[in-house]
Length: 206
Image 1 (cartoon, rainbow, N blue to C red):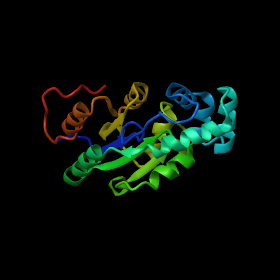
Image 2: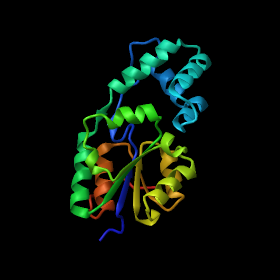
Image 3: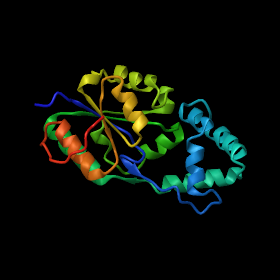
Image 4: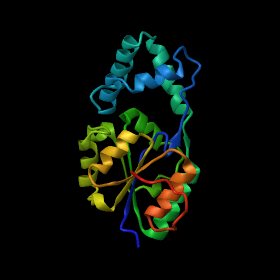
């Protein structure tokens, strides 16, 4: 029997897909650069309000503030839930008795938007946004806050994220990590981790 009893999932590019393609003057690469900037990271930690964050990145990246607002409005509108992943998680939770949580680097307004989407949020026992906890991945404190608040033994937890550095940070705390890359392989790795079935060719966790 598997010793894992808890699953922690990222939201963006794991539970949800989205597109950085917009009709604004901000190309996808620049939009992603904005989201990887120190200012945006502060926004995701809850240290800046949305208007202040948008104004600051507009100045830093020399783009109109209105374009920033519109680009992120369109990006939010492109969000689509990963129905296949939700179905797998729902099945594993029902048959293996898992607790399921989300841990995402996300601002308060964006998390409010996501939680209002017509998605099966009932499968989650808790959703942790970085702005709400004041810490973001891959900082160790972000994981520690969730582990403590949800009373999770890291040795019994599996963490799934699309970014290698976030998975490595989880591993440093004793959490079993899976990088979300090819969906089929990730699904096999999840089934294997939770003792659902052993699938040949499943990717190694790290």
